[in-house]
Image (cartoon, rainbow, N blue to C red; front, side, top):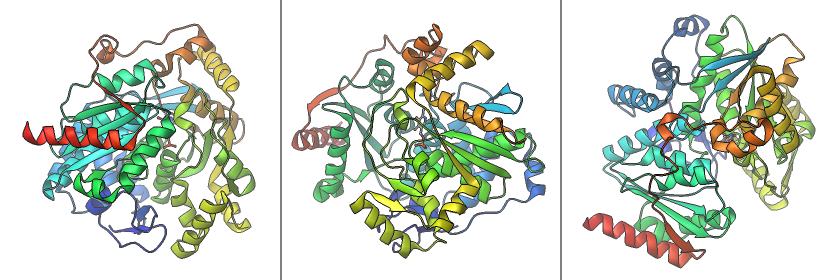
Length: 468
Ligand SMILES: *Cc1c(COP(=O)(O)O)cnc(C)c1O
């Protein structure tokens, strides 16, 4: 399997190279040159497999011979053994034609663990085989930082520095990062906003001497390997509900479009998915895009579902690539234009093609709280605000058509306890493995919102590691 860039001007790469590269050199995103095809007979043989066994079958064609098979299988088993539910991604029936799939049983209680637990291991393995080391630098407003830290802790080839805005992430989110005792984990509390943290990270990547001297790397959501790992649970849900002999729909609470794009990949591989419901909060660039065919950037407003507070959905470019008939040159020109004008209008036939597979949905904070309350009264289940948006969208969709709808539940309710308590009067509890989270000692460094100070700190820390 080889990978090509959505902008058509970067070298074609193999899986291990794509893993390390992240973004393509022409500014595009890597996608597989072609989609592996899973026959109906093969799908039937996959019924009843354990999550790890299914994951190995789904992902093997994407990896090819770039990672030795035995090592790959061990990494997959280790990654999903960190989950605290034996099913890894258990499903619950919530209505006649409505299910939820719980993607939050990993170490940091959000769905990003499903990809990052594996990607951290793959990254370390590929680095070691290239005899290379990397310094991961990232900014977080909450979920991504802890998932990345859990994925990279104690890995020999990786040092990880995560910047968070001091005082602006919840206590649970902060402690999930700062109580990790591993020596290769470095938390920086920046005196500024999340945007300041992101700007600092961008500035470090743009500082070429600094980037090259310390071998900066990223594990952000545009990395193909993260998408690949997320394809697996779409197959799991499909097989549970009778694929390949019955089709299904998915409702996906969406930010950067990474999760729902992984579902699209499963569909391209042969899983009979009828429709994707793309669920957003008030930051509704995607809802507006599917309604009008026009993608237009507005400001970001904070909501009860912060992991979906985005201005632009970066992974949408991968879908656009297919809507453009894989014409990278044409897409590159339009993306350039979009960056300047903050707006892009799809040709009507491309918009129609998108509507065959996708429909948008939007829910306010008020609607989110009322959905959390409604589901609790109806079923006794506690759900977090992100999952609530997906479930509300699925309830609406299930009113039309006979095909079952699976709503992806992306975070554990205890991660957003305040909103859940407001909606239900019930305080959701952290799972037992995190019971001591609020009392464990914290470790972080306070730094001003200043590039020089942050770079000097990272440099000092890395030098200490070498001499330790
Ligand atoms: C990251 C995240 C999302 C959005 O996922 P995308 O892949 O960016 O669309 C939704 N819910 C939760 C809880 C998340 O952490």
